[in-house]
Each structure stands twice: as structure tokens, then as C-alpha cells.
Image 1 (cartoon, helix red, strand yellow):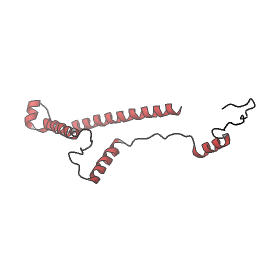
Image 2 (cartoon, one colour):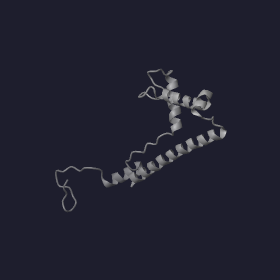
Image 3 (tube, one colour):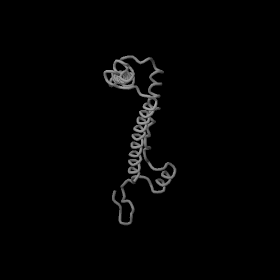
Image 4 (cartoon, helix red, strand yellow):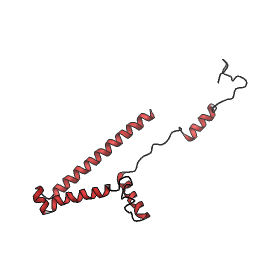
Amino acid sequence: MTTSPAGEREPGQELCGLAAPEAERRLAEHGRNEVAEVRSAPLHSRVLAQLRDRAARRRPGPADGLLTRQNLFLPLAVLASALLALAALYASPLRSVLETEPLGWSGAARATAALMSGYLAARMTRNAFREKKAAKAKS
């Protein structure tokens, strides 16, 4: 759109966009035209919601998968791995072959503390990068 040196429209041209007072009114009333950042729910609430929704619909079958539809054997593999780890610690024939000792309360507490500290470090790192990305997007 071309304007004359005085800032007026030339005849036959349409005016595009909002007038400045209307734009200011809309900005004051509705704020900036931005898409709100999507915040994800914590991991434990997503897992519980997934299990609750799955249980509310019907009993899961082999075709549905337990927690995923992409890999139906993943939950079974995780369960088998956990059972084998427990068997290596607590079944006496495996304990003698693998030369393992069962965890006491202090060992279980240390393992739990290590697991939780790793989880918290991952969460804090992810949140720090999200905040940094959000601050960069606002600039």
C-alpha cells in the first residue's frame, strides 16, 4: 500500500489492518496474541491416569498391551527382568552360582535414594531447559 507524502491514502486503495486505537483496545482487553506454553503433568500422575483409564474401560488383553501399543512385550520384559534380579538376590541356588547377597534394609534404602536422586536430577534438568527455552521465546 502506498501513501502520499502527507501520510494519507491514495484514492482507490483499501485500508488494511486495524486502526491504532482499536489495536490498543484489543491489546488491553485480551493481552498479547500468544499461545500458552503446554505444561506436562508429573510422571506419577500420567502413569496413574493411564492405569486408571485402562482399568475403567476394560481388562487389558494381549492385543492392547499393558502400557504401550507399540511394543506389546515391553511390560513383560520389564517384569521378567525385575523377577530375575530378585531371584539372583534371594533364590539360594542362584545366589551360590552368582555369588550375590540379599540386600538388607540399608542397601535397599541406598538403592532407593540413588533411584530418587537420579529421577530428581533428570526432572530438574528438564525443567531448567524448559524455563530457559520459555525465557528465550519471550525475548
